[in-house]
Structure formats: structure tokens, C-alpha cells
Amino acid sequence: MSTAVVVDALLADASLGAGRKDIAALDRVKALIPPGTRIHIGFVDSEDTAMRVDTARAIRQSGFVPVPIIAARRLLSEGMLQEYLAGLRAVGGSESVVVVGGDPDPPRGPYPDAGSVIGSGILEQHGVRQVSVAGHPGAHPAVADGVLWQALADKTAALERRGIRGSIVTQFGFDPAQALAWIADARARGISLPVRVSAPGPASVRVLLARANTCGVAVTAPVAEEYGFSLADPAGKAGPDRFIRALAASYDPAVHGTVKLHFEQFSGIAATAEWISRFSMTTTERLPSGNNRL
Image (tube, rainbow, N blue to C red):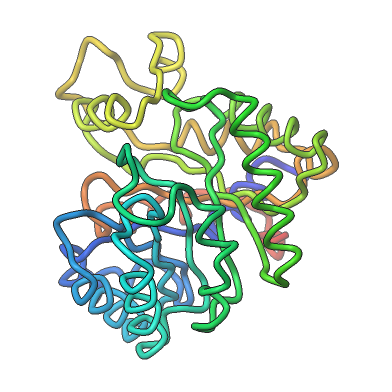
């Protein structure tokens, strides 16, 4: 299987991130990426429940699949979770969600981690059928690796017990080898959930480095150079084309299982969708006729 074929397959089912500020760009995005694309909805303090539900409604009306993020430690109460899920269900946006721990320490309400939300039984009550959880190929700045692996195993088991389809979305990074090594480790530990590897959408080096610092993602000079940007040129821009090609070149289905892509958008969803559209066309143009899909 050629690298170009794998790249094309990864792009064919890639997901994106979005927030309320991206609603106005959805008409433009419809012309660039396929209908049914999964769009993750951020969970930030500057937006309330009604705003997040409005974002899910707009994404659904644009022909995409809304995938709301639920940050456990940001939930103030069970009532807040119930209200959000009920609102999402009303607009057709509750079937698939991403459940993460979130940053606040201590937690703002009764949910200390993603596992406590999954174990509550509330998700199923509101029509949730698929849950993605977080993976951390580059480790976590505040949690030991052993704790992370045990938590992932526990969440995987909890989803299986509850009859909910599971998947993993990784923390974004700049090193495809690190991501694939982490996936291989997960498979060796018996974790077989599909994995979406997160890559940053196109952005300036300054923005990429700022987001990496915020998320605790290490960026060394060799990794930055391999990714395609210089730490000495913060005004430069970079896209994930080298990352994706390197990921595809080393991907082995027998070792890594099901792997897909997710794009964190740091410059707006339209800019990311435009990049995906251009990159996808250049990849497809290199493929032999009749061989542009797995």
C-alpha cells in the first residue's frame, strides 16, 4: 500500500475542531470538505451551554456531524451536564461526544475525571452512542504515564461494559513517530479502540508554539525542523503536510490498527478546511486512476 493511498484514506475521514466563532465560516467550509465530516466543539469558559448548543445546531444544519467536547472538571453540577446533553439531543448533536478530564484543579463540580462522567450513566440517557477519550503520546505535564495508561484502560473497559462505542483522540503534537509508537504501545496493552491522531492545522509558528506551551507539548529544534518550521522564525507559517506524509509512511495496520486524523484548528476552521482541500487534491492527483481510496 503506497504512502499516497494511506494519506488519501486518512484525509477522507479526518475530523476538525470548531467553536462558536467559526459558525459564520460554515458556508465556506461546506464547499471544501465532505458532508458528514465530524466537527469537534470546544468546551471553553467563555461560552455557556446555550452557545455550545447553538454551535452544534449550526454544524448539524450545515451537513456536518457535531461532536461536542465535555470537560469533566469544568462541569459545575450534574444538572449542568444534564442540561447540556438535553440541549444537544434536541438539535441532533448528542450521539457522539468527546469526554476529557479538563484542566481545573480542583474540579469545579462532582466530576474529577472523564471516567466519572462515563460511569455516571447520564450519557446514555441522552442518546450518546459513541464516546472519544483522550490519549497522550507526548505524556502529560501533570499526570504520570502509569496513571494515564491505567485511566485509559479503565475508560475503555467502562465504555465496553456500557455498550458505548469508543475511540481515542490524541493530544496534538509535531512528531508522528512518537504518535505511532504510543499507538503501538496501546495495542500491546490490549487497547484496540480506533485512534484519531491530532495534528495542528495551518498556523504561524508563533501560534503553534504558544498553543504547544499551553498544552504542555514539548517542541525540540529537531522535531520542529522535521515538521517544517524553524524555532528562530516565529513569523513563519507551517502546515501539517510533512507530519501526515511521515505518519502515512510508517503506519502499519497490523501494528497500529485503525488510525484516523483530527485537525486542531488554530487559525479558524475555514483556513484549516482550505488547507485540507488543497492538500487532498495534490495527493489525489498523484494516485493512479481508480486507486484513490482504500
